[in-house]
Image 1: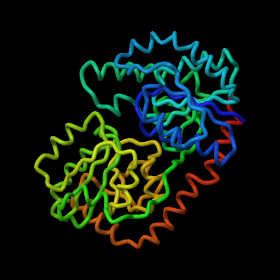
Image 2 (image 1 turned 90 degrees about the vertical axis):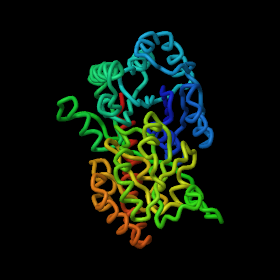
Image 3 (image 1 turned 30 degrees about the vertical axis):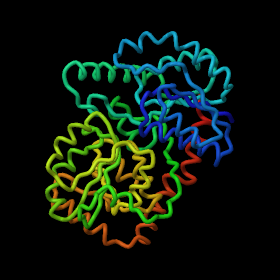
Image 4 (image 1 turned 90 degrees about the horizontal axis):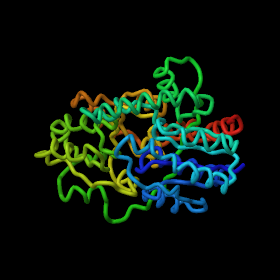
Length: 378
């Protein structure tokens, strides 16, 4: 079976990381032939695909950052290129990796014209208006995008899949349905744990700050999605408990985050990093205060690397790892007590717990889920 991925995003986020991991898994573990088409402007995605190796990577010829919704309605000129790429790749199944749903109609027309089986893989099913929490004309545009997404989704429901049961339930609630939407599963490709050298990367970032515990908070800096602002409210209590916090990533709320952390000596920023896992391995724990997630990849990465972690109590975290690693980020004292408890746990116990959960979410069930959906796609 030959698989053709399409990803039209102009940024590199969780959906793209997951798509690369799925492509690598299909190629190496399942013996499928995989090719990948993406925007030439998404250089981070292209670099990650090149690192994987063995995947035919092409550009779709569209590199402009879509600042305005009208630009997408004028993208009919892109349709011949999509059809040409699909015909050239001769894929048995086309997987369209969608960060959102509202502009997927191009792929509907292309796959219908060529009579190719298709699967729309929606990594993040949440509303733009909930996720971005913007105001003014941007909020209006987000509402329009949400409505377009809903209209489009109902036309592709038989071919729509997402990565987790909680993501599926979120979509069904959104549309008032009781059935539909496939669960495809998720996985992640991480480098093997590196051999620690003389320099501890996380400790080096502190530049001499005398913290007993180092916590990293990885992810795009987006208050409405990743919830870094909840950590900000805990910083004074964390400082009193000798906990330093390193934020890893960039995003729309980076400057607001830096401003709100001003004057806190236990906060550090390292920006976007290609090898987040190196910082995670050298830290004492990972904090994930997200407000929305479908199936969080950083959680899987922490499990692979056997790094202690504390998450918010949203359904997707509990589905993946259970309730014992959740924390109340709205109560600084409770959060610090949970950090102290977690850092005292034996790593072998942690490894056994993680291994059991990884086998469920990333093992044979993942492969079986992929095959069921690919064989049933239309």
